[in-house]
Amino acid sequence: MRPPGWSASVAWAAAQGMVLALLFGSAAHAQETLRGNPSAGRQIFLDRGCVRCHSIWGNGGTLGPDFAVVGASRSMQQLAGLFWNHTPRMIETVRRRGIQWPVFTDAELADIISYVYYVKLFDAPGDPVLGERWFREKRCVFCHAVGRAGGRVGPALDPYARYVAPIMLAQGMWNHGPAMQAQQSARGVPIPTFVGREMADIQAYIRSTSSLRGRDVVFLQPPNPGAGERIFAAKGCTRCHGAAGGGTANGPDLRTATLRLRVSEIAGVLWNHSFQMSAAMRARGFEFPRFQGTEMADVIAFLYYLRFNETGGDARAGRAVFAEKGCATCHGREGQGAIGPKLSQSQGVLTPLGLATAMWNHAPAMFDVAQSQKVDWPRFEHDEMRDLAEYLRRLPEQRP
Image (tube, helix red, strand yellow):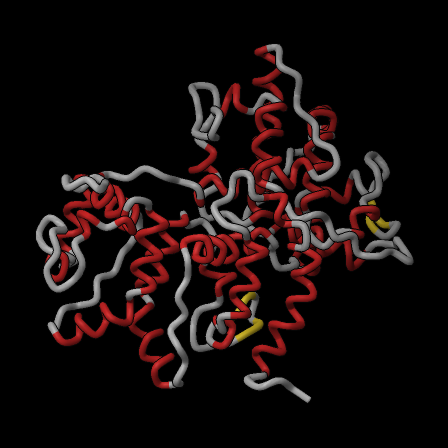
C-alpha cells in the first residue's frame, strides 16, 4: 500500500535516490571546501516536497525547472538569486495546491544549494554514434583499438568500458600525454583536441563497442573537491595557476577557463592544454604531474567548485542594487526599517547565506506586501546578490 502523498514523481525520485545513494553515499567526506552537504541536501529535497515541482535529470515534477540543468557554473549566491527570482510563481503554486511554504535553516539551505550544484558533476552519458565519429576523425583509431578494431601502436581502450563517465579515460590520456604527443609529432599526426561533449561521446562509444565481457559497471567514489584542492597543490599546479586557481603570470585563471563547463568538458580542456603545459614545465625544470586512483576526478571537482565558492562583493555596487530594486520601499533608504524589518540591525544579513535564508523564509510575507504596495518583485542577476550582501553587511549601524 502506498503511503499518503505518494505520487509518480515521488516514485521516480525514490528510484533515482537508490542510484544517488551509490554516488553520494560517502559525500560527507567531500565537505572540507564545500558550503553545505549535497547528500543531506538530496534528502531535504525529498523530505520537504521540492520533488513535487522540480526534477533532477528529468526525474520528479515538471512545474519548475530541472535542477540538474540550472545548477552548473553559478556561485552559491547566484543560485540563491535564481531561487529568489522564481519565488512569486512558487508561492502562487504552493498556495493553489494547499502546500505549506518550506522554511530552512542556514545549514539546510546551504545543503540544498550544494546538492543542486553537485549533481552536475555527473554528466549524462554521451552519444556512442557521435563517439565513433570523433574516434575516427581525431585519428584515435590509428593508434588504439576498441573491440578488436583499430591500431596497435598504443594500448587497447577496452578496459575503460567499465566506467560510465570519461574521467578515468581522461586520466589515462593525461598520464600518457607527453609520450603520446611525442609519438604523434614524430609520425606527423595532428594532436587531437576535444570540445563540448566529445570526450563523453568517445567514452560512450568505448562502452558500446568494447570486447570486454562480463564486466560490471565501476562506480567511483563521489569526487572530493577538498581532496582535489590538496592534490592541486601537491602536484605543483599552484606554481602556475595560483593557490585558488586564480592564475599567475605563468598560467591562466582556471575559474575563467572552466566557466560554464561540464565535467567531461573540463577533462577535454585539460587534455587540450597538456601538450603546451608539458613543454612549459620541462623548460622550467618541473616534473609533469601524473594522477592515480580518483585523483584527477577530485582535481576536476575542485576546478568545478571554484566558481561556486566565490566570495567577496562590491558594497558600492550593492548599494546601487538596494536602491534600484526598490528594497528601500520596505526597508528604508539605508536599511533603517519601514514596512519591513531594520536590516541595519538584523543578524540575518551578517553573512550571504544568512541573507539568502532570511529572504527565502520571509518570501511569502514579502510577496503579499509587494502585491499590496504594487511594488515590482525584485530580480537579481549575475553577481547582484553578492554585491547586495556585501552592502548590507557593511551598513553603518553595528550589531552588538
